[in-house]
Image (cartoon, rainbow, N blue to C red; front, top):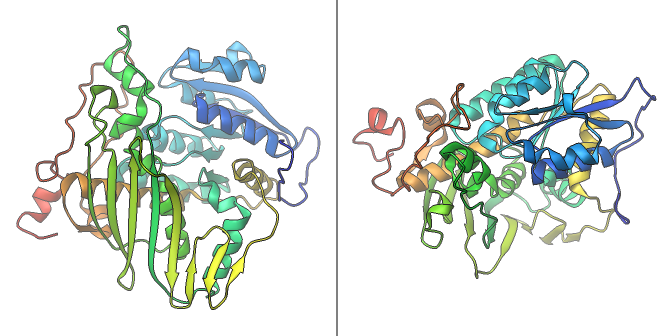
Length: 410
C-alpha cells in the first residue's frame, strides 16, 4: 500500500490456506483493474484467480498483473456466468457498465458468491428491484455485499455522520449536493465496430449502460444525503436538465447537466446539481443544514457544536474491501445491496423527471413506472442497436405515465 495509507480494520482472523479469499473479476477495464488491486492490497490472503470481460483486449492487464491462466479467463457477454460457475471463486468484483449489474449480481448471489460491486447498481427501476430482491437472498445465504460508495467507509465521513445522527446540527431542514465537473473520456467509433460493441466500449454516453452521468457519478453525493437522513428516501422528485454542450454523436444521447429537487419526509427539500461541461467551475461536495448548524458531511460541523475531524485517514477505495473481507471472515458479512439500490433509484428518478419534465412520487415510480432497460438475454456484440433519440422534455414519454397518469398533474 502507498505510504501514509492506513487500513483501519481490526485484527483479521486469518488462517493460511483455509481462510483464503479467491476473487473473480467481472469487468476488467479501468475501474475493475483498480478494484482488483485495491482488494488484494486491503487484506492478507486475497488472490485474483479468474477474469471475465466482454472483450479479450480488456483482460490483458489484469491477466499479466496476477498471472491468471488462460483457462480461467473468459470472454463475451455471458463470460460472467462461466466465471461464477467456478466453485473455488468465493468473491466476485462486478465492474462492468452498470446496465449489466443487476443480472450479474443476481447470478453471483444465486451461485453463493460474496460480492463487491461498483456503483451505480442499476439504470432503471426494473434493475433496481432485481438488486433489492437479490440482496434479500444474500442475507438469507449469509453473503457479503459491499458497493463502491467509498464515502461510507471513509473515517471522516463515518465520524461526521455519527455526530449528525446524534443531533450535532439539530434537525435537518435542508441539504445540497453537487458533482459539477468537466468532461470524461470518449471512445471514438471504429469502422469495424457494431452498434452494440461501440456502445459498450463507449458506455458512459448511453442510458441503458450508464444511466446517464447523474446515475453513474452523482449517485455518490445522493447516497451521502440519504445517509444523513438515516437512509430515509425522498418522497417526491422534480427535475430539469438538458444537452447543450456535448451534442456530437460520439456522446451518445445523454444529458450534460441536471438540477433536481428531492423532497424528503417532513417536506425537507434537497437541491441536487450535476454537470459534465468543460471550462466550468468544479464542485463535488455535500452539505446538510440543521436547526443548530450545518455540516459538509466530511469532517466539519459549524454552529452550536462546532467540530473538526482530526482522526486517522484511510484510502477509502482500499478500506471498503478491507471492511467487506473482515466482515466475511468474522461471519458477520456486510450487506449494502438494498441501500445502494435505493440511492441508485434516487438518481434514476432525477433523470427520468428531467427527461420527461414530470414531477412524481417515489411510490408512483416504484409501483407504476414500467421503464425496463435490462439488456436482452440474447444480446450479441454483433447486434445492430440504433442510438435512441435525445430525450426532449415535453416529448419524452415517461414509461407508465400515459397509461396511469393521463390528465394528472403528477
